[in-house]
Length: 589
Image (cartoon, rainbow, N blue to C red; front, side):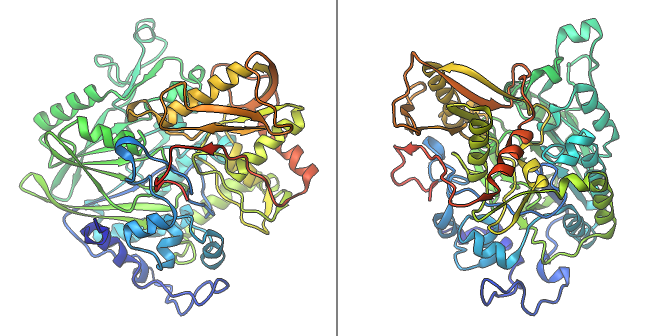
């Protein structure tokens, strides 16, 4: 079906109708007016406006961010957003040839577009757009929501324990927030940051353990229900009353260390969500129910199928920039699922027409933040400069240079991941390396210096310690199988939203459509082509252990040592598995 027929997408297309035409890849802008309204002139619609950003990963400055060339979907999500990439995505949405949208939503011609249009995002630019959209619509009718993964992902965030991002969110004017990597600080720090945050920090699916409540080692927002945080809020937006329910990442204590937050439990809690929606509908009688979620896109779609009474799910976690509000049918009607990408690259704008106690119409826009089109807000610019000043010497330190585009996002190894894997093997003297399939991390363009700031966007976290230990070939296969199931499980409620573990020193075959335990085969050592022996032990280097703290140095030290020795990255060989079972899949270029 032609997606141009979708009204909300046509609305988004019209936003950039005045964007300048590029004569060639070396021309940044031609005959622009530098008036914000020329590029972000959303015509007012309805009577309640929601702005939504997510997964900024502490990127205060504009960034380069390459969208994935591999984002595979299977079973019920085969060929559906966000599992459509490259030219197929452009064809699906009918935007091929629109250079601005091609650059924003796809990996197509990434280097060419990046050279012409520069970086995207930046909190000083986002504040300018947010303030403009608030003022032009009506501040009393506008709500700004942050979908989480905001306090982690940069050196300044790590050094301030997320406090720099709390200040940025306050200056931006965030009203409601949820979390995931926020919970990778210690519980005391999370609570301090949530208290310092002007926004309401919500989570209907984070509970305090009963023994912690009984022993008095942890407090709850509501001791009767056990909620660690406020589960929902009611917001007055003009003449409308809207309920916003918070959904934290449900697998936090599996994907990240529980040792930092020992008294809290996390779950999808879809039954609890249904009970809460019913309760809110009955007792509060809101005109609309919005879920601010960090489930991940496919998980949000399943939640929209099994829970009724939600109007919109504004989602995050999987970093998917989807330029439509995706309709999901359920027993109660339709719930729309939205996602706002990552790294400050996009701002979702959802305008609702609320009449007689319900939503009768809407317009949705996934608004790209092009840094070359948006002037910086002076107050946010100064805040960012002040935050970075104490660390500037480290941040600006040049480690190496590159001729290759360095990126991470994709189901399998990216070039940044390969550098980390190569560094682990080289510095640790290992046969094999394993690196988590994180989706956070920005891109570095060819010809650009690699600074410590760039390295920190790939590694700055609270459990960065490295290890080198002997692991059997049998257990290496089990690790690969376990992560593959997290990524490709047919049931989205069992997917944890990351990508495949990154590997160095081995190649393998993967069939994502196979059953659990049968996806991985033909594991071979790249140095000699020998097959991995299940009974033999291999020296494996890695980092970011969840269960217990590893004994080695932080991974950024390992990678910096390696890059200083290499000095220049050129013709980097990225270990990509042999993927089978993907014929005709539009989720791979």
